[in-house]
Amino acid sequence: MSVETLRLGYVPLVDAAPYIIAHEIGFAEEEHLALDLCAAPSWSALRDWLAVGQVDAAHMLSVLPVALALGLGRAPAALSALMVTSRNGTVVGVSRALAARMQTMGDPLGFSDAFAAGQGLQRAANSRLRVGVPFPYSMHAELLYYWLNKLGMPAPGGVDVRTIPPPQMSEALAQGEIDAFCVGEPWGSIAVERSVGQLVLPGRAIWSAAPEKVLAVQSQWAEANSGSAKRLVRALSRAGRWLADPSNRNSATEVLSRPEYLGLEPEVLDRALSGAFVISPEGVQRDAGGFVQFDQSQHHSWQGDVKWIGRQLAQRVGLDTAEAETRALSVFREDLYCAAMGFAPPRLTSDAQPNGTFFDMRALETVR
Image (tube, rainbow, N blue to C red):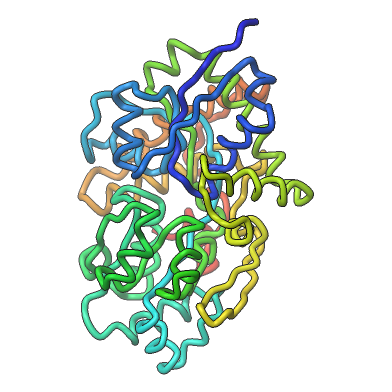
């Protein structure tokens, strides 16, 4: 079989690791694929690249293709999600001034308790909070809104949400443009390294297994190139399994740290992979085991997860919930993923339970 070249776009984040590792370690080559990796400056840029065919596939926000299917935002082509490539991997951080007020008001900043962090944030906010997220339709935004709403702070209506590309998040904090952020690593840790911010919570403390990034393609591309799509799925699945092996962590951070990828110190990148975080400029350390998950068991597009995304978007913008759930399910091609991996095809069930739990410790499907 001849080698096929695929242009694959990504945003420089730790959770882009499966795409980079599939290329660098040879998993793509094993599937007779050559990946031409293209770093995008923002999620909006990557969305546009994929929608117009500038790239064949992309490391993509899990919520974005669903939002497009619901008519939220514009794109010249429908997008499909072929597999989940990572779960979790985000952090919530605040400015140093806000962190100081939170501590003064009794928040221990333990980096694990979503209730305590949320209540501390509410008490310390002396004006309307300005919060940075990487994209309006992202798991970052949905986790933020769910968390704040459950704690009695109306969101997004009660906060000023600003869209800021991940690499620019720490600069926005330094310039006083935002008070807080929810962003994927390593860009939260970069705010700590620059002494402009403090981390208060890992995203997994809000939802323990949030589907964060997906492999996205144009829907028509998936139909016309199903063989290539399946080979790419298998390559990324092997990369995820490799990343889940702790013995490969040092090699992974070395690869990701290269100038052509993230171009940052391996020690900073290792925090996300190990879960051993430095949460403040003073060097306070906290453990967040399982911070980001790449392993093969996490690659399924669980129906409950997908329906939750559709439901959250529908409730936020006033769409029909049942229709939104149905459209969301049509975006995630679990059938193609299962075919690629040799698994039994999925069966649609009305009472599908999602993966993981919310911070209030109730099953996701019971929290409406």
